[in-house]
Image: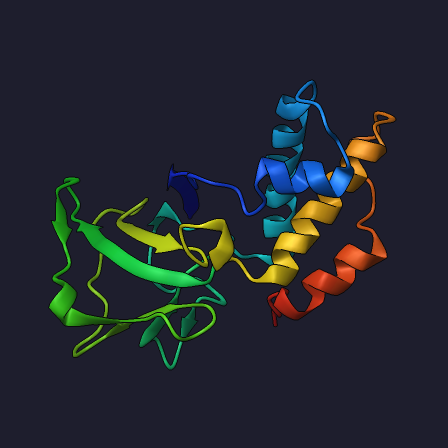
Length: 194
């Protein structure tokens, strides 16, 4: 099972002018550094909460559907990684000789309201791959939306505060604990894993 980023987000949840205003930086001398910190702290926030902030496209390759913790309702629902789910572009199932066949979208329902989103067969069940490894490929879009304003304000503030913390504490330690204010902002968005 692998998850690959196909199309990265085109914007960050925090714009450079907003970050500079928060940091009280009035020059352009460190713009590149601030942009880098915004991107890296967005990635850290996403890792902490298990969610995509800005919409992007993923490709997930699976060996089979019955992945522990991802299959539900007696094998009739498959949970996708990286909520919130926006859409599923395609589900391709490969036969033993490696020929892929796109599963007709009329044969499954995409539940974008659940957290995480799910693929649910309309009738029958999931198509069985013939290939033992990476026999299923799912292309899907996840994130709160394509613009920074689509991201919940608490998550945008968490990215800004974490970027500011990294900017102000450049002593070379690669990973500092999350500040309490950031932990509080992230808490309602953390995915509960059972």
